Length: 205
Image (cartoon, rainbow, N blue to C red; front, side):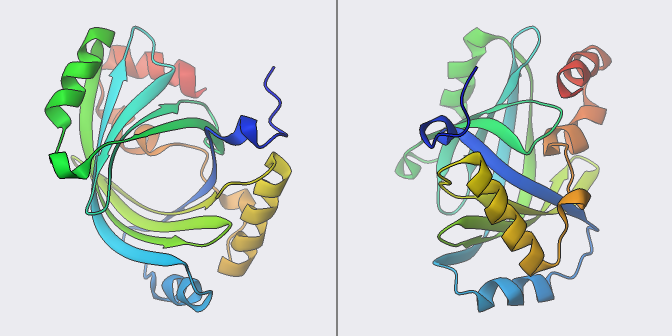
């Protein structure tokens, strides 16, 4: 069993809390609070996230992300609770342009069961210990607005939880209200073929 108390075990672990808000949510107060804390970096961008489900029973999902600042291929584990998930990011050269065709060819031998693209309008704030993101995401006819708080480089799981709790308190959020589902489950699952829905529900549950 992996010891999550060590920083090395957390290297490829995403630890975050997601909060759902109405799509027409007025983020003015949220953004003012974040700016007041003096982020090391803050920007707004449009993101294209293309997800790939591979294999006979997906235990994880591949994501090709491209926006104005980066391009990367990510593997994320799928679980019932999205608080702590495996996340492995491979940086891609943005100077090469959109590498969607190469990624599709790379993943094809694994057996692509489904792929689809989510569009996001994202506002990102980086601090020493945390990344806070507000975004609106759409997929086909589905849409959702979210606030996400992710601990950055924590030395332990306990420290990550302390960071999340501290920032939730500052932003007026409560851990009990967080959403435990991923965007894949929220937006994409209802549009998938029934056989794939059944396989994924077993993983999510």
